[in-house]
Image (cartoon, rainbow, N blue to C red):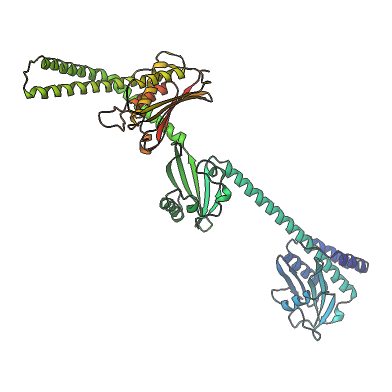
Length: 545
């Protein structure tokens, strides 16, 4: 900050105020008004030098000042009012400024080197500019003769010098205030921008052309894959996101920097509990004024609910289509199946009665008839499953105790002798309210889930049933410690006829029927799974209001 030497200013005012004539006061008043609108130091120097040369008509007039935050500011005018871009002997001037104390003085060419180069003057009158408690510059008037500047005119130059110093000080205060205001505004804008980015419901980070992270918003800090902002800013993105395939990630960034085009990528992740999350990741290049990509913004939006809703709509449409198909053709298919099955049973009876003797071909006939009958019954079970889609599942709905349904289901499963070394665990919270549902259908759904779980544990394991209240819904979880389900199959397991079991060991309708039952009860059915660790199906049913 620049400040005027108040002692020098007060002294000058006392010594010279009384000696100024009316014309001089008029000149000072006019100069003060002109300097009032000269904000920059260069403008102050130019305005003052121009005014002094016009007032005195001397050979040259120079205003020069060395400011810490700018450097040398200089304006040189000759008697014709022309600005001289070069003229001040800068080395001579800076040496003079550094010699303290610098006083008002005359400099003649036969005594020392002049401050302003040129042959149009032989001596100079130098009036120091006091700022910050020291001499920072001077008003230099070039004269043909010392007598050209009498005492009253020297006082006028000294007064103008003090006014210049005051204007420079005010300019410094103004610049300091402006700088502070601009800095504060920039800081407030930066904080506001960070708050906006933190408030966005997306994960966002920015890298520069060296692949270093320069921005990391709050949503990128939370979650299983989140990291604190302070621990990642300034680090290489491939080092921070080391869990991602580096080749894939680097390829995405390279395309963004090279093409400058926005790229949207669908991603799928699985947490430690087997929950599947779906993401829409956008790579957004930031172009500078030259059209070059300097930064790339990565925006990750969690679209799990949207994807699951799309999957649910797709499943519902498939179920509806199958329902319409079933209602039209299942009965027609069952009739020939019943005929085939009856004929096979009749022929088997005749074989048993010895109608075809005891040749080797009779044994083949028995085998073939058994296959015909079993396959006919398998087809009938498939068509019966299809009928479940065409039926409206209103059922007998009343208040149901979920704990009793789970216990009854486990009792039935334990007597089916399905699987070996299966351990059953039941955990039902005591505060679980009743739900309005068809007890038989809910039990059918639980048994279907449990049967699949047992089939997923061929070497044995633990089948767990958990039920509790979560907010305004009853949650039923059926968990196993089996082989798990791959991520590729997760989105397809509720589709009709999709099965991971061997041919002949599953129709692919069990989970689809289960999904239809829960949906008809205004509930939700979801799944999470880890390969080699197990699977958990979750039924969510609305509680009685």
